[in-house]
Amino acid sequence: MERTLSIIKPDATSRNITGKVNAMIEEAGLRIVAQKRLQLTAAQAEEFYAEHKDKAFFTSMIEQMISAPVVVQILEADNAIALYRKIMGATNPAIAEEGTIRKTFALSIDKNTVHGSDSPESAKREINFFFSNIEIVG
Ligand code: ADP
Ligand code: MG
Image (cartoon, rainbow, N blue to C red):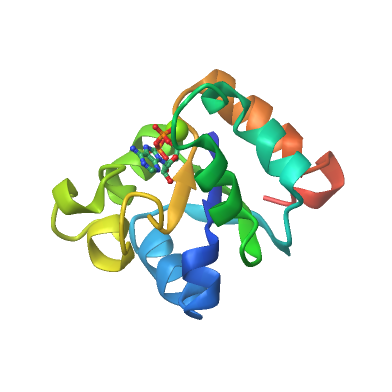
């Protein structure tokens, strides 16, 4: 079993579609083993997305991530990291495959509904960023 970190982003919490996103996650065979709703501060969002700090979109992306609450989750499955990236769909929803979360719900590249870890190293870092061991019950 592998674990990945998911974020249901502000564009989704503000549209009240977190349950619809969770239904797609569960239908794909991923188990939500931890979950909480948070309002990120700018400092928290900047630290979480530090790898992107030199990108042109960084400031607007941080503003978007703190514009409403997020739901952070740990998802578990065999190959959870790759499986979740597959059902999320491409970063830009305009080119995401039919049936993916982003194709179904995302509004634009900067309002693209979900985050998912992109490697075992980032999954470990991102899970530890948001969760302590006692919050993960399996
Ligand atoms: P992903 O979320 O698919 O792993 P990245 O890690 O490359 O994508 O980017 C992180 C987030 O930054 C994206 O999900 C998206 O919200 C935002 N982003 C990426 N590229 C752009 C862009 N060109 N313009 C605006 N926002 C972007
Ligand atoms: Mg990424």
